[in-house]
Amino acid sequence: MYSYCNFFMVARLLDSQILSQIDSPKPGLENMTLDESMLDRIPAGITAMLRVYRWSQPTLSLGHFQTMPEGNVAPWSNLPRVTRKTGGGAIVHHHEITYCIAIASSSLASKKGHHEKLYRAVHDSIVDALRGLGWNAQLSENCTCNINSGIGRSPFLCFDRRSPVDVVIDGKKIVGSAQRRTSQGLIQHGSILLRSSVHAPHLPGILDIDRFNSLEKSKVSLRENAFPDAEPVKAKDATPSCLESQLNEEWCVEIVNRGLFLALS
Amino acid sequence: MSITPDQLRFCESHEWALAQDGIATIGISAFAVAELTDLVFMALPKVGQTVVAGKEFGEVESVKAVSPMYSPVSGEVVEVHDALVNQLEILNSDPYEAGWIMKVKMSDPNELNKLLSWTDYQSQCGGS
Image (cartoon, rainbow over all chains, first blue to last red; front, top):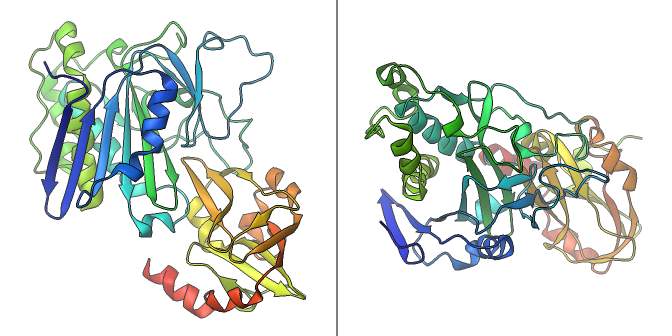
């Protein structure tokens, strides 16, 4: 068992070095403050930082420009609230793992819009890992967005929205990410939904969704396309309880790092 | 008479400026709009606000990212295209005229000389 606060590691591939941290569960404001300062805290010689964490209590995080809908009485309405610096829809952080990637780069700062390669590489890595564990994960082909949708007209919750790079299992979104450019570089937040929450009961998590009948079937997977040389992330045990313990912060660090290296290469 | 990109000066961060009688009209380039893909929201400055060349004056949200917009010049904001927030599609069809974002009374018009010409800006975009 790892200890939360002091769990740091540096991974290196070619010229890229990633500093990863598994942090202890914290209140929303503290989590957001730490994420917002990540670009300032990247040590010299480190290409990117990854922080993986949970939340000390169920919390609703709003996208950067979001406000609560007026008169809305929803299961998440009374949760503690924070606003992320990243865009996208609101997230109920309950039975989920959050990750935050920070990449300091002047070339990234001058760009506009999302960093497609980073989204795809991280999400492809998650898809590949979940398929290795037996889930029919893939990137969504759908999008609920268009230029006329406007911020108030998209679904309120991130996991009710679809963009082509979201990770879905049988059409149900289980991973969503959003980015922010700053004068220093780029931040990407991501949420991996493990189980449904009483505060958003219509949204199933990974562990609520049936896996393939045969793990072997899942190994004919996107790995051949996206990660031909990568070792598969194996299911040590096929029982649901063991799977639940496997989908933890360490797993998240390994999988996100794999995608991050691909994006930086 | 319509505005053509070769009349404009550009930031490396993809904002443009058109100067006339001490006032700079400012927007974001067609290249930036294409990079942003699906625009969702734009946070604009206020009239009377002071902006600084190279510093953030607003933000634009596309479907998966929030990106800052940087002012090409320093000065006081004298007019803001508030209606743009509800008509972001204009940026796709006419980013250099109907898609203007703000007008700034320049405090130092010499700052325009530090911006890129259309030719140099195109080279930057082609190489990025």
